[in-house]
Image (cartoon, rainbow, N blue to C red; front, side):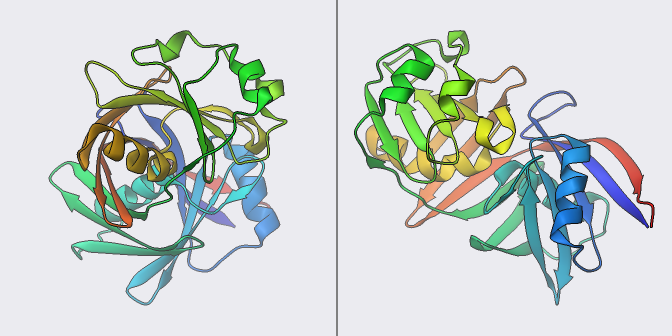
Length: 261
């Protein structure tokens, strides 16, 4: 069996920026165990698989160690593959997922994703978070992940987390965030329990970050940057119970994976 694969740098305007995802279009689903092995072999934060479903598509995402219910950058990468390589000629792509229907459109060089809002709620600060970052946060919230808010203007890039401590937390991951003079907010994201110590640009985290920062900033349209080593910019908008997340993508690799029968 030979499978086509595309490595796409999502939330990037040139290669080696943003967050790389592997996209593997399928005719029908493979066994779960095989998809997990493929994701482990690819060794990127996410590998996306999708299959046709009428005029729409079903999509699933795997880290090197686990399947996840929602992934932003690999959805953007999958849409990019459909638009740029697979001659998708409709204005909208609909991906059906464990997080519901995800609608994706394209406007010039931007791919715009329509995701569900997952607004976080304030919670007591776990002592493990203070241990992991060595800094007392201003506020901690939780939804799918912990959202850890630090004082305005702190340099998130200088923070060196204790990943072993983060592994003791009970949610998918931890997103640290603060305000910034150039952007409405900046962030970093860590998910060591999912085989990803730090994710370069985490689209799904913005389903939680945008409701928080929209309320704090008093506006629905936000410009953000994830300040990982590779970095990536996102344009976001809160629309009721939906989050619009927009970014660019570029192709880095086109190839084949050969699986022995």
